[in-house]
Length: 355
Image (cartoon, rainbow, N blue to C red):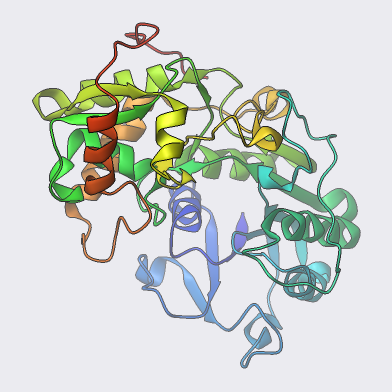
């Protein structure tokens, strides 16, 4: 296939390009040229700007035909609509990477692709930080309106793996496998109770493979794309982290929610994957229904593989200007002083199932 990737030099896009080249596809990148081209002459690199009002805009995309475009970096409907319209006569399919954050109300588990999504109170708003979910939902609408049955809207959950710039999953890997990367840490790690708490995530490489498979098969429509609901719990994650850390792995302190809230731990970022019960509207955020994606080929590798590869990447990544939002060592020590270690409420599983 001939593929055009909007973005592609950073996290998910980088894995998309790797997977596409591994399959023998021809890849063209469209970026601002601010990040290195990791593949040299193996890909064609076009320079521009997603926003047509910012020079040189979309001029580099004026010519060329592709079997599909994969949009990894669209956040604003006006901007996504511009590229979608420009390319529509010359592209077979348009795959837009959206997010499960589009859902209006995630208070209940089991949300599938038909669940209501958010809408912008002000359709002209482009405040991504404030309206991330509704903006992504509006981008989906733009792509679907222009491409119809040639549109694919993919809604990943938390994307993890090597080259993840967010430090969310990486924090847990570093805490258990490379604790020195986080500065002065003690021999006991704070882990949010209860161990049975469900988690969902998707390795970027599994997501990339799934998206390419969908394009190749001629699929269309919308897909939630993360691990199966209740495939993994926090206990499963911790067991895999302890195994990966070996002698470096810290002891566990399963800490109750009240203590974490008292110490002003930031949900989702301070302790990644932790969402307190006070966030009632997000109670089902880690139990999204991905049956459709699994039926159509989505497979998730075992946690141990993602942890090992993330650990290897973290070991060689520059550590400066990282870990800015995660739990600090000072706060962790304070929490441990206030909440002595408690045994987990359930024994972590020694094995897991890949789907």
